[in-house]
Figure 1 (cartoon, rainbow, N blue to C red):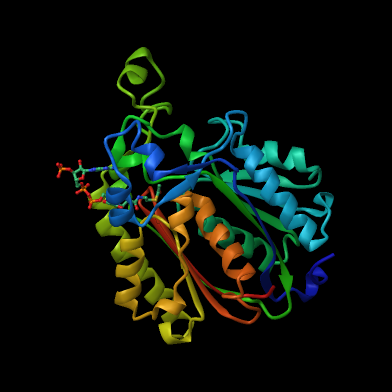
Figure 2 (figure 1 turned 90 degrees about the horizontal axis):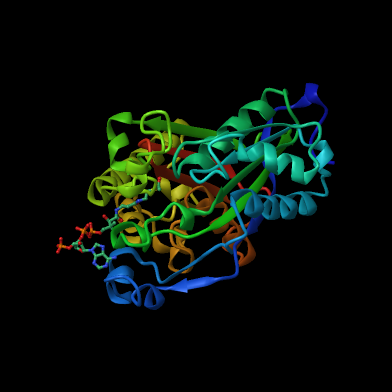
Length: 335
Ligand code: ACO
């Protein structure tokens, strides 16, 4: 049992963390066997060396359930105690019903509401903000936020400009009440004028599936990488500055900065603009690629397990992605 009686709720904390990553590892060298690319190009331009790929029988809900089970087990919270299940993803099992409905059912979360939240790769930070709002307001006590992606199914494996960048994985956090309110600052943003730079053109109401959309490969992710790159550096730095100044803090106060893992050059450029020292910045995209909504919780797990993230540390998380969206969250790590 986590948390306090409703009347005494003062805020929210991350009460548990769980992750799941598929076993199969796909290296840059393997990619270069069927794509006109190389380990040298991918690693110098992005920092990525390998990524995990889901089994053919695994969909986004399957990964999400595994990550969620680990979080619930660690928190010693029964799925029946969950009030809300939020799945953040850009690769849902299907357009509808929500992947969260399937996940909640499989977990046995019979009392919980469930919905998907789509905010590109910023989904995890958006989901954390929604969960924090519900918990801090005293509406709910146990909200599960799961970032889960099987991006390997939405990639055009003939397109070297996108397929080398992404991987599959899932991470879940349980958000529960606390007297101290350890999650204390958010910045969420959106600029839809950049919607054209990153997305999957067909399969929705604008361009329903047809022979032509399949022929033209429009059911795969399309990205104008250079535009997303410029946007990302600006958005990450601006959002971090805002969330820190709202809290009356500076980059020097941050123990660990965990940015969305898309490209090492983006992370380094943003960190440099913010004046972070290398030991303040966490990155693991070398081994996972960009896992979209799962990238931040997968980093948290590794940082926590290796001792780089410790109880009481000031943690800054920042996401960016399709929309174009961005978002930051400042919290004291409480595990
Ligand atoms: N292997 C070899 N060559 C390649 C590859 C590849 N995999 N991909 C592109 N190239 C070639 C291009 O064709 C181009 O060749 P040309 O000069 O003959 O035309 C050359 O490499 C340079 O291409 P650029 O696109 O200019 O390379 P750039 O240095 O900009 O790097 C990259 C591309 C890595 C995609 C970069 O722009 C980037 O990281 N952008 C941000 C992407 C991102 O963060 N996306 C995730 C957002 S989160 C979400 O919501 C999903």
